[in-house]
Amino acid sequence: MSIIAESLGRIKPSPTIAVTTKAAELRAAGRDVIGLGAGEPDFDTPDNIKTAAKTAIDEGKTKYTAVDGIPELKKAICEKFKRENGLDYEPSQVSVGSGGKQIIYNAMVATLNPGDEVIIPTPYWVSYPDMVLLGGGEPVFVGTNDNTGFKMQPADLEAAITPKTKWLIFNSPSNPSGAAYSRAELKALTDVLKRHPHVWILSDDMYEHLVYDEFEFVTPAQVEPELYGRTLTMNGVSKAYAMTGWRIGYAAGPVELIKAMAKVQSQSTSNPCSISQYASVEALNGPQDFLATRAAAFEKRRDLVVGMLNAAEGITCPKPDGAFYVYPSIAGCIGKKSPSGKLIENDLDFVSELLEAEGVAVVHGDAFGLSPYFRASYATSEDALTKACTRIQKFCASLT
Ligand SMILES: Cc1ncc(COP(=O)(O)O)c(C=O)c1O
Image 1 (tube, helix red, strand yellow):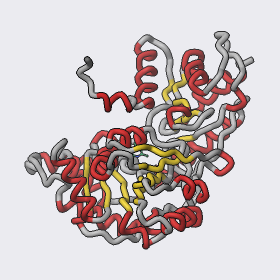
Image 2 (cartoon, helix red, strand yellow):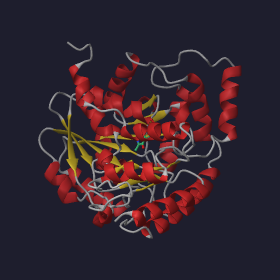
Image 3 (tube, rainbow, N blue to C red):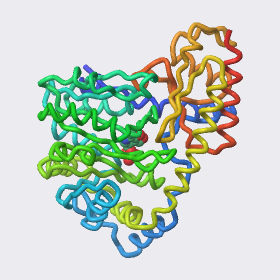
């Protein structure tokens, strides 16, 4: 009998990490590989944030802290929610964890009973379904497509709700599609949720600051105050402040839920890194002007990639409003043969052959629950993007 728990058989390791690993292996073997698989900004953490961390070390702020965050950070988070989202939260309503990932995990483990259902629109961030499964719940998928910009339609949400529904996990701008909901689109969804008071909303706002063309970011508790009492508004410093390695994520919501999440954290990892917490206080309280500069750089890259991918034979690439991913369809490539003679039957075949033939690493749509697409991250230099897209065009042209 295996030592490994049966529950682990229900989940899979992160497929996005698998692609990054495969690309690294090819690179180590001497191949020229361009990775468009990464889910992190290529920019550096701003200097004022690094300095705050160094000061924290010098001042001896290197010991255990309160399990779910130091008071200074909770205060900074409350001010952020007020300033940027018009939401009122008290420090007792705030939880800080080791990344947004831990926050979502804590919320699932703290709330799910066996058989509880969690609605997840597809394509989804890879970790949602597995976190639900680890918490003992059942993911319920709601499909979208590129005709509606990969946005969940209110009627589809309504149809997916059952008496067992505990949560909707909502993510805008979305990883992997980049889809971002306008106020009107979100209001149409919150109108549905208003009719189902037993459903809670976890809003993953991780890509809030990465929106383009003057898109107005909004979050559910802001659009529909009636949902405030059953919404967990989650965010983090990873993407906005280029702090993926510092591991700080946070959320705000009803006190009972926040206390339960702290209980989970207290018996697993305890407090997030003390130094990272002080750095995050500076991230949230310090100058914010670089956010717009970086978003402008991402917007330029998005336009470059969307233009070049649409020029590739068999690829259709919608223009997303946010995040740093594109999610193009490869429907026009299915049924063709690659130069190695392999029939492209699905998006996994496409990305595998692309990596082999042209040394470009992207992630297949099936990993995010919606095929036939792939996800390409444009969080890399314009030079690398131009080179990668030229190779993708070449690969598509070589299909017969
Ligand atoms: C949609 C989404 N939510 C949450 C996270 C987790 O972020 P963190 O690195 O803070 O754990 C990510 C990271 O890729 C993400 O894309």
